[in-house]
Image 1 (tube, rainbow, N blue to C red):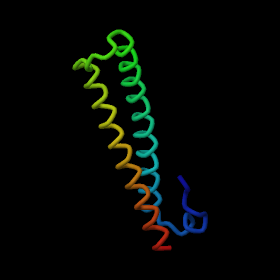
Image 2 (tube, rainbow, N blue to C red; image 1 turned 45 degrees about the vertical axis):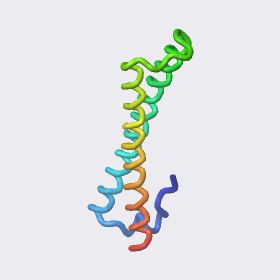
Image 3 (cartoon, rainbow, N blue to C red; image 1 turned 90 degrees about the vertical axis):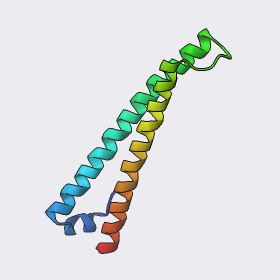
Length: 93
């Protein structure tokens, strides 16, 4: 993701810089968590497919898959918030 240009960053107030930094941190943390949870779900799916091909997912595996989608939505929401704020700052300055 592109960051704000330096001339815009220099014009930001302290509260705007803090908000930008918190949104960047949230975006980074949720992205890492999403990758971690989806990796766990992916491993569970592969293991179950290998052991029982053609069978529906067990409840435990389905929970992991659902949790992966949940964290994906959280990460996308954080990304959208960050993009919206950066666009707002570009228009403002």
